[in-house]
Image 1 (cartoon, rainbow, N blue to C red):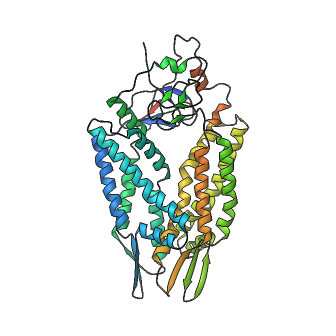
Image 2 (cartoon, rainbow, N blue to C red; image 1 turned 135 degrees about the vertical axis):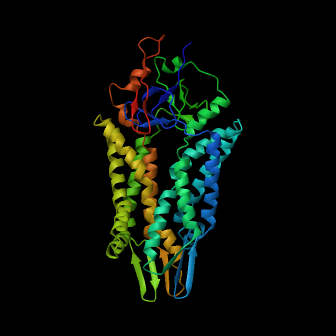
Image 3 (cartoon, rainbow, N blue to C red; image 1 turned 135 degrees about the horizontal axis):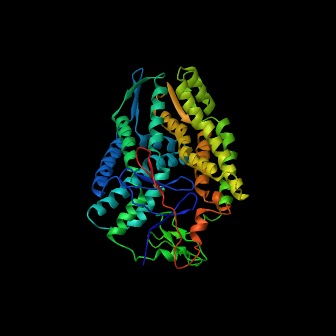
Length: 443
């Protein structure tokens, strides 16, 4: 009996037949142009080697000082963990916890889980906890922000040059190397590793005709991407990774609206309240996000002023507006420009983490400027409000199900694929477009 692998687009829900890919190729959805999967660029041996190198670099970056300051014989230095401890001691426990999660814990979880999984695959085994660890990689990857932290470190260094003598420490180079190595690690998609695991420990094969049986469209696992038949049971679990299956995220629009409303309310104090207090021999100075932008602009660093202005002021506003538009149109089941709205959702997903830039600058600045009675900088309540805005908007984008954008269409690829004209013959599903590294498209 003829069998073939199906894959469902995670952004529009269209079904496709999987096509074999070369090492530098990627498959895109024929409807919304989302990347469905990529060709494996390396085997488990190379994966394990790169991940192990990233782990060693990660440890060096965590334990070595990033930068040091020297002024009038006083010397201070800061590690990332030490900066988080300073925030915690200043009663900014929530901000300290979020910085710890996004810069230390989640990257460590991703790297540790990948090393465990790839070493097992290299040995030709699917180790215990394989599926659970790959699910944790997908979750940790969304919240890990090492690249944003690296830009925050560079901005902090530029800012500190006007206050004291800046001494670059080994931790800075380690974070730079870690950022580059994580770019290679991200290329190893958990879904590709799931498929490698299936080859070593095959699941019971299922006739793909059953997935396209009349009456119920198949379900897609949000974690591993497996397409499974809808049995109609109240609660169904993925046969591969065990995650609960949903046709659409439960209460997606309602939860998105609630998170957006909370973020919009907190955005006001985030911009009005001070994010930092500077205590010096000349008195106390309160700094808001806007005053930080003005500082860089007037001190001859317009590029940094523009980066902070865009990341800390423009991006949160645009995220709130864009997600509100997406939620409103999905709630009304609008058919207006679904492809453009999908592109807007991708943009929101991409830029969401960069709003944390200002929080990382504050974290490092507070840890570095500790010159006793000469000058001390502490975090203000605006930092807590702004950090909450960033997290809430990221949660809102996670709760929104982009497939709702396409559900209102009367005729779609997914609907056609899920309703065959004759049960005995599966419908002709489109092949995903294959894109090679030079941009060429193959049918």
